[in-house]
Length: 121
Image (cartoon, rainbow, N blue to C red; front, top):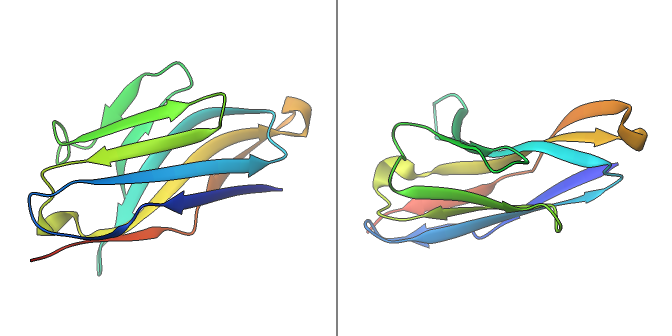
């Protein structure tokens, strides 16, 4: 079994910063891409940022220049540093990882349960 656990959500004022972390644990052989998604009320889940095992990153246009994704391959963690937050960033943020298990024979997309980020004055 594989688990992803997010932390770091909360309430922040517009213009503020917040740091989200996600830790993967369990029967992990290796992790390919890791990423952060978000889902605002009444909207579909969308990709915020992703990072490959080699460190290549991809960002949604709406967060470029404000958010930074990073990972620690040794610790199986991924972090999202968010700055210049605005109310449109309010959403539940989910961590996702493309994980190989079973000695590398099986691949799966693992999701965390999400952490709420609220940007409001």
